[in-house]
Image (cartoon, rainbow, N blue to C red; front, side, top):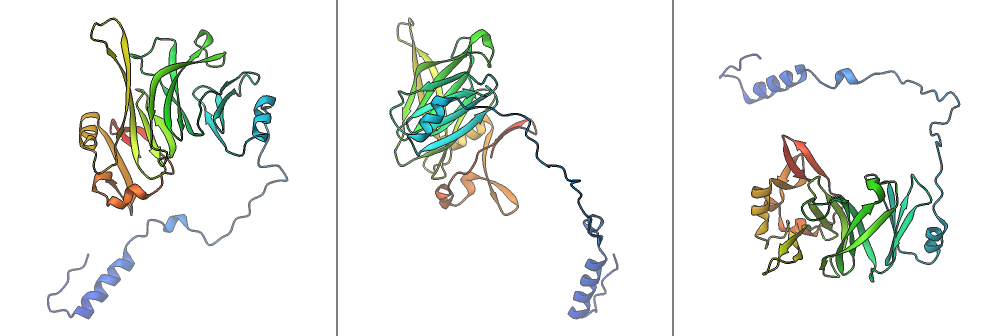
Length: 274
């Protein structure tokens, strides 16, 4: 880089800086070309149908009777979920004839998630839990598979892990990590953690099932700092080209709708919630 003489005018100084910038290597120069290549499909289909799966007739019939339908895919258990009004269908797309239904929910379903079960809460046969969010409640159901094989028959076990929510707070996303922690994303931009555990009774003869919903984004919540420091989770938002902790953002953040939530447990051996 050439030296700048102190007696130079501002105009000379500006021209010197511009000349230096023009000489700087453009890292993207090698990616550009003046030639336009021609892509040849060779008269072949770019998409190929490998197989077809026939959705069971009872589920198809349920479509016809309700306009409120949401569909999700859970690869961890080889199931597709069909939330139709206040009914939930889980279809095994590997063993196409196997499907389950839950019809006693009682309120319109807004979101469904399948999360790893906490080993200290359930018996060893329960490896996954089903989280059902409705207009009024968040419900946890334990899932059991015959012979511990996910493609075999599945059975849902009702639990006492259930919590009421405000009807104005619609759940849009449910995710979890490998340790069984459950995070709930609401349409209004808030994110909460659904915690559940067992407590011994006073006499130690029975377990009492308890659960709570802890807000991670509410400015009035004191659980944010303790959750981030003790459990090493960070709530982040993308602002410009930087990732900032949620508690540093403006209060208007909580009014932005949740589109998606992602957990990455491999960033510097830490756990991040995006």
